[in-house]
Image (tube, rainbow, N blue to C red):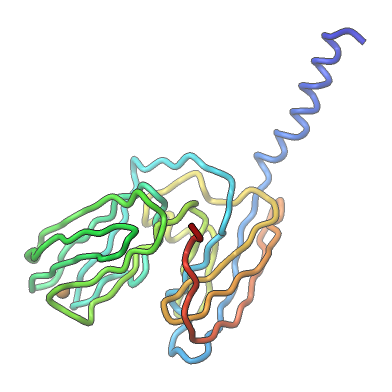
Length: 222
Ligand SMILES: [Cu+2]
C-alpha cells in the first residue's frame, strides 16, 4: 500500500473514533434520601472528573442574594473563573465575608440596593458569613467542571441541571459525554457518598443514594 492509502485509512480510523464520541452524550438524574435532617434539599451532586470544556462566561450570571436576612441560594456551585454578585435586597446593611482558604475576602458593610462582586479563580469551598447577622450562612462551591446539580426540596436532582444553566446563562453544556464517571455528594451536615456511573450515549442514568448525618469530605483532594 502506498503512503497515501495508509494516510487515508488513518484519517478514516480517526473519524470513526472521534466523530461519534462528540455527538454522543447523556445526563444523570436521581433522588437523594437523608436521615437526620428535615429536608433533602441543597445537596450538591457533582461529577468528580470530566473532560475539559470551553466555557463561555460572556452571558454568565451567578448571584447570591441577600433577602430576609438570608443568603439565597444557600449553596451555589460555580465553575472556576466565575464572578459572583452579592446584591443586598434587604432593608438593612450586610457585611459579606469569607475566611476560607479558597477565597478570602471582606466586602465591609454595605447598604440596601448596593451590589458587590468577586471572581473565584481556585476550586474549593467558600463559606460565606455576615458580620452583622451571625445566623447568615451560605456556600459557594468552586467546581473543576460544570457538571453538577443541587437537590430540590424533594431530593431530586439533574446533572446538568437545565434550570441552573438557564439561570446562570451558561450554554453548550446541556449533556455530558458518554462514559464512566464518579458522582459525589456534598452537604455541610451529611457524610459524602460517591457512586460510579455510566453515562449513556443517549438518555439518562439514574442514581439513588441514602445519606446520613456526618462530616462531608473535602471537595477536591489537593
Ligand atoms: Cu447580614
